[in-house]
Length: 211
Image 1 (tube, rainbow, N blue to C red):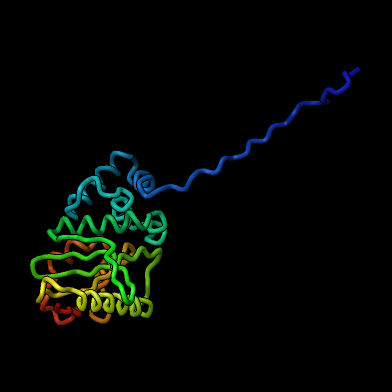
Image 2 (image 1 turned 45 degrees about the vertical axis):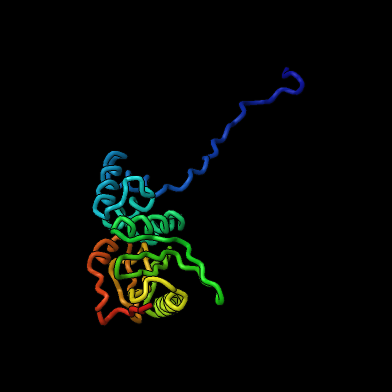
């Protein structure tokens, strides 16, 4: 006779899987290359190539490395934090010799510019677009036009540095090549160093404004 209150048969247990946090860009790169050490070596190489500190946001360094390995750019971009991306852009431009200011605010009308980067003869007025996917020509046109307008407003409010050429620029993480839309260069972050070394204030394809 079974005792009152006892269970007949064995108690079955069910294992409930614990959801794993999504992989970040560094983990994806480690998996792609086979080891964390290989991923770290790849990121150091990217930092050296772009002229930025090894302490630059590793999420962005890993994303660039993944893009070069043929990873889906949409998927990689989703793993990036926009603040890291903007900070990395500022660091890369500063490493190229520009004096960088971030989050420059204009009033009447109110506008915000992500990065204003100055060299002895040139001012880059930069919008950092953390797009999650590639953008077509039709969508780029209003983005380029808006950045050109912000640049014009900045030039109108500039009291110093007379004679410097101002160039509106849009930086992105997902494009593969530099495109020029309405005179505004759309530059992928992995092509930024080459762009900075070759940009020419007398290039007729680019919309420079003078203060």
